[in-house]
Image 1 (cartoon, rainbow, N blue to C red):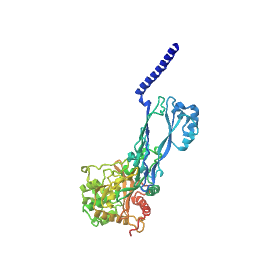
Image 2 (image 1 turned 90 degrees about the vertical axis):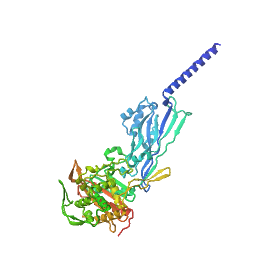
Image 3 (image 1 turned 120 degrees about the vertical axis):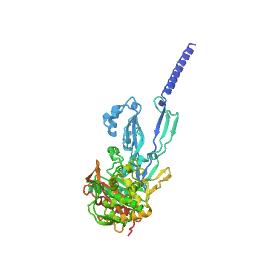
Image 4 (image 1 turned 135 degrees about the horizontal axis):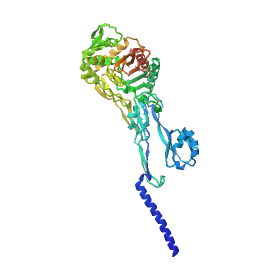
Amino acid sequence: MIKFRILFIGFLFVFLIIIIKLVSFQISSNSNYSNYFKTSKIFPKRGKIFDRNKQPLAVNQTLYRLAIEPQKIKDVNNFINELAPLLKIDHASLEAKIDRTKQWQLIKTTLSKETMSKVTQLKQTGIIFEEESNRYYPEASLAAHLIGFVGKNSENDPVGYFGVEGYYNKDLSGLPGLLRSERDLSNNPIFAGTQEMLEAEDGRDLFLTIDKAVQMIIKGRLKKAMKIYQVREGCVIVVDPLNLEVLGLSCLPDFDAEEYYKFDETFYKNSALTNLYEPGSTFKPLIVAAAIQEKAIKPNDIYNETGPLQFGEYQIQTWNNKYEGKISITRILEKSSNVGMVYIGEKLGNKKIYEYLNDYGFGKKTDIDLQGEFVNQIKPFNNWYPIDFATATFGQGIAVTPLQMIKAFASLINGGQLLQPHVVRQINNKGEVRNIQKKLVKKVLGTQTSNIIKKMLQSTVENGEISWAIPKGYLMGGKTGTAQVAIKGHYDPSKTIASFIGFAPVSNPKFLTLVILKEPKTSQWGSETAAPLFFEIAKDLIVYYNIAPEQ
């Protein structure tokens, strides 16, 4: 009987301990449920980026994150001595990262497979490896401003910044998945516990309008020209004027997308979208075309160019202060006469000048599918003075972005269509393809006006003040520009922005190219710096696209 009572009391004692443990577990579970269900984010694979010919521009490579379970490390000193050299972390920094009171700590990210293998061979306890997808750019900085880069947000999640990576971040990122697993009090997974998974949805692949070969041509030519002409900054844009697909865009200096963190933030900005400049004489064809469209002038109308024009305290003269007397409207473009342009502006009228500035898209975003576009508003019509309208006719006193300029100019040679530029032509979502079509913003000019201005621009190239190396048998059109740099409300006569905008062939343009060189030192004139660069690029593009001669 006594033995039975002792056994019964022992049983009650064990049962009481079990009850206390269960109550303790229940209270702890209710107060801190996350101790027993751990939710982990499953990162999707980021979509890849290709050029128009399916050449990879941005892909993913597998790297590794190294985390530790400090409480499982047997010998901390030995652990530090063996791992620090492999991880390229100094001993003191690695020691500071290890907190023995914690169950899990992230130590190092973006480890290569080779480094991961070397660490594994050490056979240290308490080490955890997790795969992570890292962005890799096979062509390095070839198209850095176009592509952008992938960085981290405040929660250490990958996020695209600038260019295509930034603009299409949601498409490229996909949707993360979730893994919810039941854990015990020591935070170890329970084998028979609840496991819930929501699978990740990988990002979409993008196929760009960009042609890698064109990009290589313009960047290589631009780098060489900047060295020859001692240029501080340069930019080249090539588009298909018939649909405004961007075939290539290179602005220098740029940055390395994989090591973006080594560059100042100013390098990330794409000057084609963000930098304002006064276009100078490249702007003149826009005003001429508007005046032709409004029937204010005809190409063969005569203007008597006798000398400078006075506007109050301001005097407008030709670039070389030479005057030819009676000249045609076409000749005004050929010799880039500022006083002749003022005459055309007067025939067009101030109200129409202002209307066409808006019709061409100045003062508005181009809405290109790249992150970071900046726009400068055109001041209200009532705030313009007569001198403002006069100088606007030859591209001074008005600030535009390079992308606005090439968008507007394309309408002169494509039949008068103002189109929205774009750099993505196709989005692929698990084999489901969405093609990006050309988008008409508005019809600015008539087809007849477009044909007339193309012929005038051909004549401008052939009969300009300087003879250029035009490939034999080919007809090209274009216009030079030289604008002084505005500093604190005044122009610095020693600093200019040299530019040239041109196209080929004249009858059916395959490409339109804008070249901008900021503050060239060898010569201030666009005709002697930007124009030669354009013709070098044009010759390369004629060969690449196998364009047949017109003559």
